[in-house]
Length: 123
Image 1 (cartoon, rainbow, N blue to C red):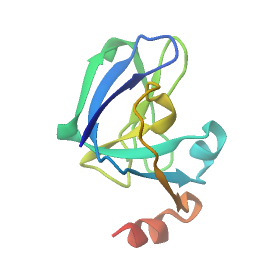
Image 2: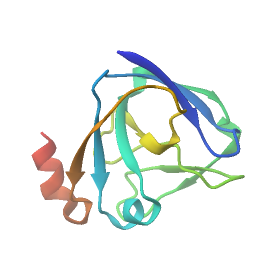
Image 3: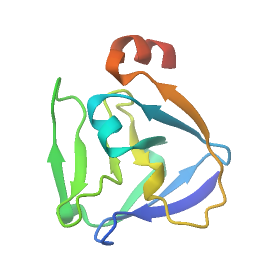
């Protein structure tokens, strides 16, 4: 396991997480991920710590409302959120990790446009 840190663009939201040394990152084509270019690094709740910025987070829900999309109120960056696909984990935006972690992810496509079938394939 490797400790990584990251956060939003303005620095209000900061986190740290313990992740696999060879992480798999999901690239989703659903309506929101496609627009923002999110790459999902799935981190169990117990391996994630919000260091600062809880008060800076705004919440957005759509569709089923099961996912809670969290954005920094100041800069608008979604550095992590609670995904519908992994209720016991956070989805950390790979692109919000601080530079220098040295990890190279394996990118796996996730067909979020056909969410139920794609979730079944995740196992």
